Image 1: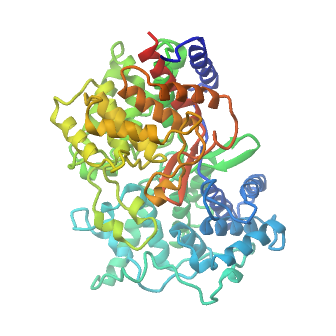
Image 2 (image 1 turned 60 degrees about the vertical axis):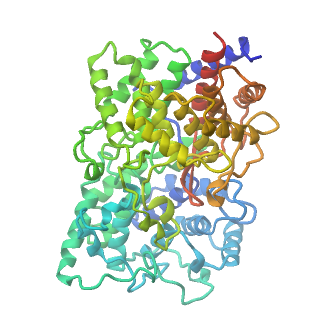
Image 3 (image 1 turned 45 degrees about the horizontal axis):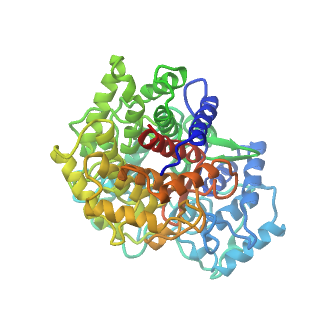
Length: 618
């Protein structure tokens, strides 16, 4: 029994037509990449600090923050967070005061203040970025010692531990933070609020990047200090993208602005002005709201949607696919980035996440782009050359352990995850992950025609099967969370020839069926990556239902009843508009950073439904 019929085809056609109509003239799809509230708060703070009186923008960001406040006065980083998030609440409270449009006595801020004090005040903030932003604007003391000295960045990559042992994401945040900490920098304006009343212990705790357990390096000559400042400045300037942002991320761009101010740049220096303009280009409008994306997802969304539409039967030689693949081709990287340090013999060929990204390719975006352009390679030499360069780059990025990372090869020194900072375990390194390894294997099998006859494929499948959880699931690093990882693993394994009788595949399939909701769909809470075990959301979401279905489709030669029920629920979800369809299913940092991809309610359902139809309805 299956659910083949007019309705399935109609839904696929409707989705394809809807997406075709949403395509921009340049071939892209520009959906919002929504990251809770912190970036909006930071944007208000940086505009006020630079004394840029962009009142319409500040008011709209302020309105967005107020709309996101919960009844207890707090802000949260995902909707079902059990208690309000202290760091996010402090950021929002501070930025609302700094906006100048709210007073402490206003009911929303009075409730926020009460919540902050109930959680122990400023000294209980655990988020590094929150503490740094507060310290840089005079609300929080810098610790006079016990910091990593700035001279640390002078150590060469060949040294046992250097700045390049950190992941790229961590590195571009650490460098400006080290500059700020070194300078003990703080800047205030006439509008800067005073948060001293939020210190339960008025002496407060200082920001020591990381903390007292790190300690200063001993014996480094102080004459190297000026060289370290210059190296840090050069590090940041050399990684500024064409849009003015630092490494195409809003958060580290904001940190760079403060770091440049600390070493003497004027508030109106062209580099700072360009950075602010780059941040403005990252703003996204959704309905009546505007918010700051941490890194727009244009390349990612366009590549995924182009591929999904091709799977749905949209003609490769039609305008929609021709325009999208032409855009994707134009975004292939030609520059060497930091990935070259551990992968020096490979030419550039990857793709990055956002439109302005020219330096920081990643494996997932690259395989997404290659899936999208695959059908153009036979008839067009330029696509064939791009395919070869991209495939070569992906293969070269395989870690020595057999898995694939996100951004940089063999950046997996576990010692760094022990650093006493909340974000260290997830952000400090860039190791092989089940979702990246599974997604890469899926591409190599289904799009590149590679399989277990190749030793590097066997090495990848061995890595993946050895990382399966006891319950049969896999943990996904970049999506929420065990459903995401299990989908990636199962589709990856089956694409390279691991059949449904394999014990790992059987266990993974059985686990997916055990976590199916009564309504036929699937839904997982962001709590999973804090608890480090599957935590049900209690409701079904479009993307997670589609991931689970797609995995089951990859495994089963014919549909089982649970799949048909899932297809019916997925189709109904396509016609809903509520918190379930907007629930964040993209992951960044556990307990800190989650993403609501506005595109995901279209991409993954279209792909799963098309795969079902193509496999079972012919």
